[in-house]
Amino acid sequence: MLIRLHKYLADHGVASRRKCEEYIRQGLVKVNGKTVTEMGFKIDPQKDHIETDKKLQLKKQQSVYYIFHKPVGYVCTVTGKEEPKITELLKNIPERIFPVGRLDKLTSGLLLLTNDGRFAYEMTHPKFKQEKEYVVKIRETVTYSMLQELKKSISIHGRKTQPATVTLQAPHVVRMILYEGRNRQIRRLCQRAGIHIEKLKRIRIGPLELGNLQAREYRKLTFREIALLRK
Image (cartoon, rainbow, N blue to C red; front, side, top):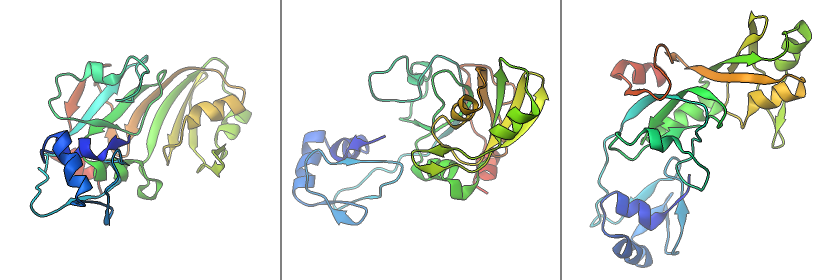
């Protein structure tokens, strides 16, 4: 999620957007250690490190962490034209938050929300090995060959995925555990195997389970849950 640098500074209480543009022109702002003077420069708040001159103070916002049961029919993006967005269901959250990773419009289940870029990175980068478990209801009766096909790697944007762990739960239901968050990985695997998905739901991220949280509901994570996720 890229945003303009002057908007990021204004959102963090440095000054108005126009004033922040002046500070950028004056060379008072660095991104990842390099001075930026370009107007309209965009950053990724989850990845980029922003520094300002000592006389400009970035207000450190309090980090917040939510678990949300995303319903089918909503997109996880917080910008852009596609509607409806999950932000319509989160209007009572006072902080400016963003989703950790994404679930596509037709997928429901566990979604993390935060304003902590480091936390989001730890939850999504493959090196942290955060398991993500899904329940997949399919139209066909599951066969042994289908299970074997779903366990194989698949190439997405020129890079192979880590193999998924797949188990049979019922004749038309499988559980799948992914070890990295690749774009529509389960749907791509099912399409390759000739499997038609009827429902796809994420029920777990690492040690955190969706549990009894109902669709559209959300709550703050406990300190213990946050600590377990970051182990």
